[in-house]
Length: 153
Length: 363
Image (tube, rainbow over the protein chains, first blue to last red):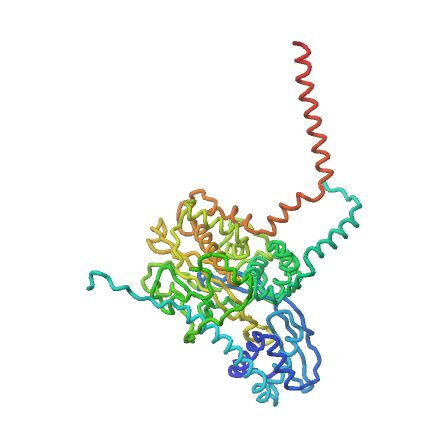
């Protein structure tokens, strides 16, 4: 296997993160819109499991185990030999399979098309949802003002 | 002693059938969907995830529906499910400093950078029943401000420069995991935090309250309380690098505690820490207070004999599934145990009567 450059690893890290966090409905809708049906074989069929999430004491100190989250993973092989991995939050085998297919295609000649039709719109949708919450939070920020006191007059 | 006795199958089967019917309630009323529970009873969902120790809102909603709203029963279902999951690994510690905060307040620093952001809080409501909710569920969209783009720094960061607050130096030590090895005493802070974050909210609240009422008082201020989403990252061996595997909502509370200093520590502020799945504000504040109380030995404080300072007492009784399992098992058939007790009491009674009767006869 060719050693991945840091840059390509970073790019793959980014799209895999988007696929993992994406709402299932949004991912499936975009994927179905592509109407791709690549042939593949399983290297590891979708499997539901748990990951123990860690925190740090005081937010910055020693790690501790906080509790688990559900994750579904799978790996597949495209006909051209490209390996795709899916690691997604939750318990959907379909989502994991789709994520693995997108991960594989992102390493092929279809990358630009898949990025434009799946990864970019997903990123934008998720960013928009995040910004909408941040905007609501911002509206609840307290603006302090000091009352005019007697001795100042 | 337990002796296998056959019988009751039919009764049990019928009881479960009736349970299913009662769970459904009147069929004149629309059935509750999991999405409704997840979206509209989200704080119950959060509690089940925190104490069930598994972040999965859909599963928690299913557990609540199945348990007819009995949250401890729902937590039990989640814990049981959790044991069936293969463990893929451990995440990297979450970066709560990068949290996308829905809420972030400090009771100690009015002008903290990032400000006091109230978020969707019950605080400052009048706690009057809102009969509008009984009529219809229409709500106006919440107002929006200008969204903050940059992360909100932790408030304790600002005190660090002065060296008057105890530091939490980073470490890569592998923490113990009480889902893998049973708790042993004396324990350590990472294990105590794991135990407290999945502990019963009512129990942890009661323990924290006891410290406020004077049983090992530790003068806590809420230095910071934040609620929001953080990304979870894990190293993936087949990739050779870490990727984000999801995003979870957390509540984090840092208390700043008055501390006069001790034989080993200079006078400074000390800290208690709470971190809980979901929007779980009461629980995370309580967790921070109990964490601080349990740190007495490490900080060179006196053991005042208070319950909240006794880690064996606190951690052995905080788990509501262990507690309810042991408590509720006494309602299950103990016919043979009780039969032997009955024989014993009858015998003692006979002996006591025999001792008295000859005396009376002599008089």
